[in-house]
Length: 178
Image 1 (cartoon, rainbow, N blue to C red):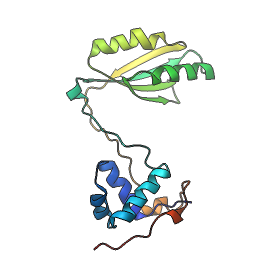
Image 2 (image 1 turned 180 degrees about the horizontal axis):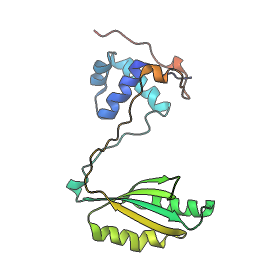
Image 3 (image 1 turned 60 degrees about the vertical axis):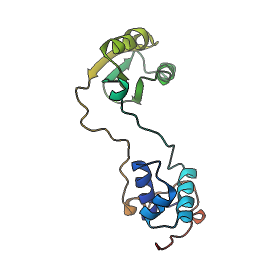
Image 4 (image 1 turned 45 degrees about the horizontal axis):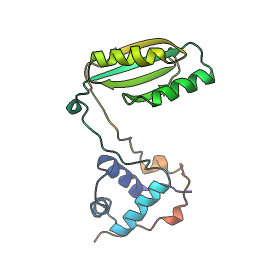
């Protein structure tokens, strides 16, 4: 099984900070030569640790200034209702995140829209019409205090016992910086 070492964790942290970093620059940053560095990146991708590369856009510069957290309670928590709600939500581009929850609400959504009338249309024309929706509670975000897409990278010691689905032998040994 693949065990992450300190270099792997540095690679992951660097890729989270800048997914467009050139391999030569990444290799220099993690003290590898380019070829072993690229091999490690490919192995991390194959192991599923790097799920995809994305570009983060500024919502305000796109006119998406309203962010709303929406709690949704279904009339019944049966598999058919849960599946139907999830399929409907997956089709909506303004739903940025959707979580199945414990507690008072069944789902928590983060919705981003240009203005309050757009959110009203989202509720009236879509969300309230999804079969099985029983209750909707919305909270408008006044200010975004923190927004982060990068996961906290654990220390090498913390991941020493964890493994993923790729054999370690596929990874090249660390080369010395020149």
